[in-house]
Length: 234
Image (cartoon, rainbow, N blue to C red; front, side, top):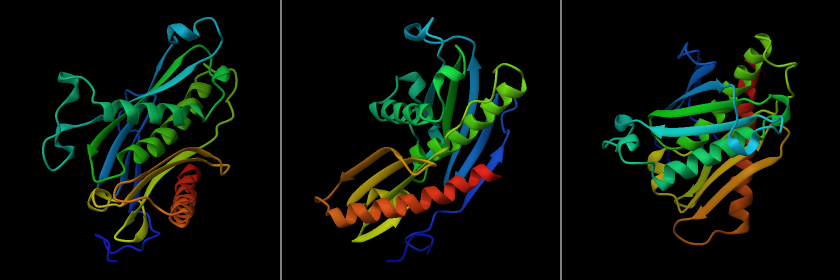
């Protein structure tokens, strides 16, 4: 099949990272994957949620939002009407994924809050948020160490995420909105850099899918995440 941008089935969309776009954050970046652009910023609070007080552990959490003009029709500003179930699900996914990156006992009793704000949405906003948020979190931890607020830089396990799906009988990597909205199978994969999976969300939208389709989706996701981990070398 011919994709929207004529790229091969196994290819990522054009990808770029712009660092330090918000000087007030501990670390920040803009991740662009095709037409999806997400601003990821990390802030630090020298306290933890009540359920962690006195345990000697830190906390990593995320907030996700989409700006009103991020989509072709205006997206309701959720701060005025409460967060939707979709938003809550996505930010919990981001938080779960990012907490896999580090031993929370090694960051002290502080909270690292990762804000992911979608500037433009063209599919894959949650996976772009995880990939960008992980990169920003890695730099934030390095800066805490440089500032002397950590006794030592903790071991960091890079994390990345990508979408895949079955569209018109073809298994495709990194779906844009048009592909995603017409997908018979929609999947999101979160992977650690050592090859272990953190989360896999795979849903049949039209009809049940075969094991062979799932295996091909997984293969493409592994390939895509391997390319995303190269960003950690920059």
